[in-house]
Figure 1 (cartoon, helix red, strand yellow):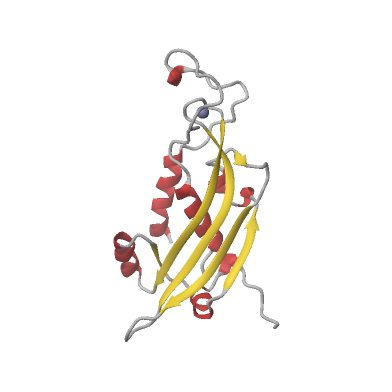
Figure 2 (cartoon, rainbow, N blue to C red):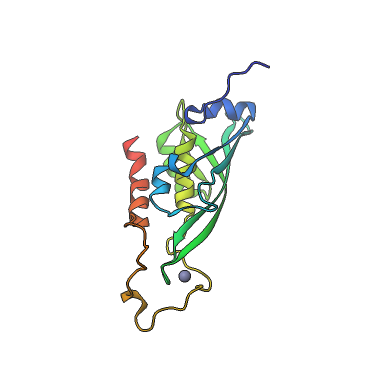
Length: 187
Ligand SMILES: [Zn+2]
């Protein structure tokens, strides 16, 4: 076998699905800047994000087979607890099926209808962008400890000042979501 290694950032989804091919790898958090901007870091520190992608096609009677990508990823990120403002480890364990169709309008209609994501098939796709999109959607909107390790300040906790070592302001999670929603129009 002398197959050319597949570039996940220039992935031919149709070919991967037809071959029922698999690929896997890992990326440092810093390579996913939208995700990096939404969390405090990974746990343990600087641990990479592991990902796997598997192409599949499902036969359709009297038609072209459906193209699917099974996407999994594992990471653990630190987020700021919205109650005590301490760091909170959030394990991310992504397991998504994404269907690809050739027509943009069909993709939009099916995406609204089906629970699985439906995207328009492009000649090449950046798998890293897709993994990052899915990880951002998997982040809790209001991260909170089940039980905060430190006693809460007395009185209105919302008025409490953050600890002195607090990280610089992060973009609001909704800002990242709004950006995500804008993306398909720009493509
Ligand atoms: Zn907490």
